[in-house]
Length: 108
Length: 118
Image: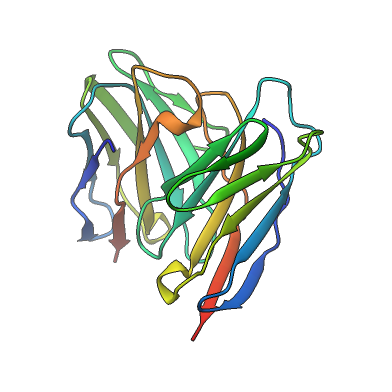
């Protein structure tokens, strides 16, 4: 499974767009990139998944450059309720191995 | 989306007792379920992978005789913490993989069970 590197923490303000970048230099050809969100004392929740270029859903966008060695999760107009830990995962295996994640703190 | 439940949501027990945690996929069949443990301010750590009708596969460093996993049906997996001690206090989370599809997207996580061993 490809190792991922994310910022440990980020702060932003309500209404701002937040971009969290994840590095995955040894991503394999068949690997997908997936982001999960976790609130305190809850299980992780699937946000978005992509393979290349750009993916958008009702919650977020995922930007993946051509070399796929990194990806950026974009959260538009964040609110206080977006305060959570965000995990970037790379792979295609059945198992999900979580990295340390990014602790996002939204300020009023 | 698919729903995974866990029961109980929290449990307090005395040291030396055993605790059973249930993980159910409510609206889909899961041939594979996973058990994670999470300590405060830390990431999730995969403990084991359980496949319906077969023995669980444990990650390195996880004691299989202490953490008994049973996956008797396509909708239920149980984790039993035997002879629990205070260091076993943690947040236990299960996930279930649907029988269709490929990739991590098809894994759905339960709400977690908080275990406190006194």
